[in-house]
Image (cartoon, rainbow over all chains, first blue to last red; front, side):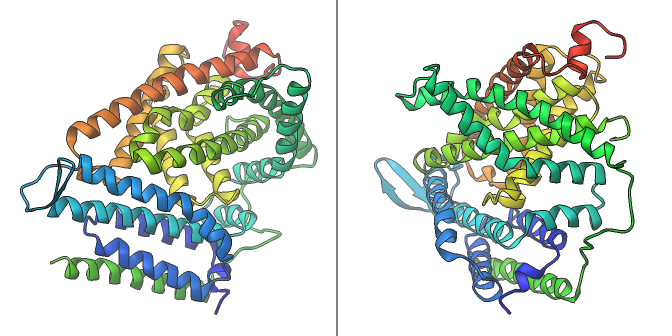
Length: 252
Length: 193
């Protein structure tokens, strides 16, 4: 059971996740996102092999962010005529504002958990392959993205090298955090110039090996839609409808 | 749309996507720390950072799609890097890119000057705000607060993305590595650039 989320077709998963997010945006009651959030957490517990330590670490900023949403909505919430439930430091909070604030915070939690689920159970290379095979992304684009993705470790090495070289020569001073920000331009320019050269070389190499970017029907690594995907799509749909209906009923 | 593109332009655009994917990720982490204390308005003044790749890439390549594609690619790369904001980012990337693209499409991809780049930055800001209004439920907030957020975001788009993006691309041109791209040909006054 614990491999189902990992085995899903990335494009199907992507469409399901995006669809659920767009649906959630229509609900302003606190229950819908809360139920949905819990359901997704349970799905992750039972249907995936999650690295929970990493999960908690990644969720931390979003949890803090949801508190930011909570108080912003309380303080700057739209005014309405419902009952004032409590007043703190001259700010009165009405029933409706409280509901909205809770709803938006739970929405942040639900959306980030859903996204984290996608990010942590999807193989990046398979994702791009699937985008090309199922969602008809142009091969020219897909393979260019793959090539660029492979350059990532090189770019990070280069970044460190440029930074160290500039420090060695005393070009950059990093005493305060704002100096670090203004140094970004000095670091970014050599990085971009290097990227331009790499792009040219990679493109020549691809063309020299006969890559034309023409659409194709056969692939070396086929990514298919299987019965698991249909099963999971039904499960997702049930969770989504369940939380929408549950939210509407509970907030009556 | 990609028919008129050379392969090297597409690879260049994707590599920019990678570089700015990293920059965007760093910016998100910075913003998250802020946002915990100040709430969603923390992102507004720095929103222009996330629009910048559209402007740079359009300034260099000057072909239809050069604004929306790299923004989308940067978002896809961010997801490939394992960013927790995941698929939501791809969607917002497409929408921001479309905002910038709309501004360039208005001029028929003929004029590329500071005013157009600032307009494109503002376009990204407007598109992304409408999307944010819907996704993050700004409807629940006070209208004057929403107006403040909107103004900050448009200004940030115009200044950071519009002016900053042009400045970065121009500095890159000065390094001499952009020979063979539309930006260098336009500077030399070649026809069809």
